[in-house]
Length: 116
Image 1 (cartoon, rainbow, N blue to C red):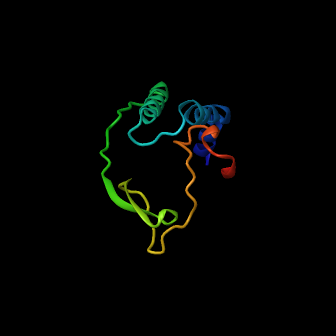
Image 2 (cartoon, rainbow, N blue to C red; image 1 turned 90 degrees about the vertical axis):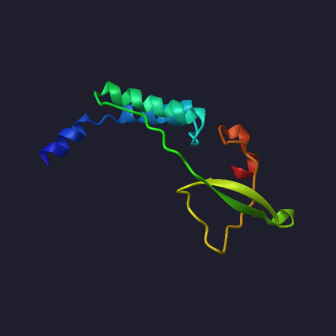
């Protein structure tokens, strides 16, 4: 219990929120393989080094699985899509949803009002 208290006393909520703000607002979505992923990785690396941790960034290959996306509203048109290994699978019933173009979703401006 004494060790737990020592750890809890060192937690700074404002500092934690600032890290979240930088990662979510300044860097934004960190899709695998994008520049933003590397910016975020380097940000975290620098922050951990400031705390005295030895840090090494390791590249991990991501295998893509080719799947089919069937769009009912386009007469069941099938599109080939790649999904990263480790992504969740959909059961045989599939998913029914409306597709709404929203770019990469980097800003609220990319989402139409109907998504709101």
